[in-house]
Image 1 (cartoon, rainbow, N blue to C red):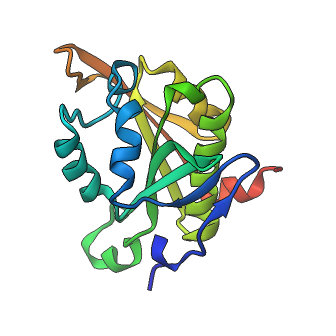
Image 2 (cartoon, helix red, strand yellow; image 1 turned 60 degrees about the vertical axis):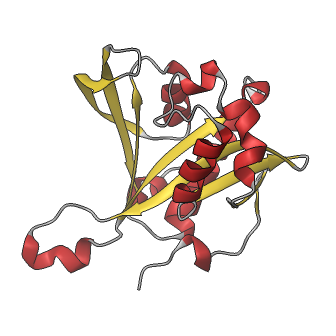
Length: 190
C-alpha cells in the first residue's frame, strides 16, 4: 500500500522552515497574503472572500503542507500523489507512482530563498518520504519566479505548451511543465 502524508512524522524541519500538514484554521492565517494581487496573478483559485477561501482551502487539505518561519506561515503548497498513465492491464502498478508539487509564498518572504527551500523540501518529501518515482510541476510560462524555483531544485523542463492555459486576465498564455525522476534525484550530488 502506498504511503500518504498521514504516514510521515511531522513536523519536518529544513534549515529555516518547519513544515507541517495544513490545518483548517490555516486558511485564515494565509488569507491576508494569499489574496494579494501579486499572489493571485499566478494561483489557480481566486477566492474573493475569506469564506470562499476557507471552502477552497478545506478541499485541499489532503495534499496541503505549510511552511512556518518563526511560528508564522510563510508558504503553502501541495504534494498531490497521482496515478501515472498506463495501459489498462498494468494500471494497478501505476497507481500513486507520481506526485504533483505546487507552492505559494508570502510576498513578505520573497527574495530570501525560502520559496526554493520550501519547494526543495516538498521534493524531498515526495521522493524520500512517499517513495514516488516521478515528480511533476507546472506553471504559466510568464511566472518567471516559479520557473526559477523549479530549475533551482533540479526539475527538468519537459514541455512548453503554446497558449494552452487561459489566464483570468482573459489572455491565453503558454504553460510549462517540469519533472524529475526519483532515479535522477538519487543520482545527483546533494
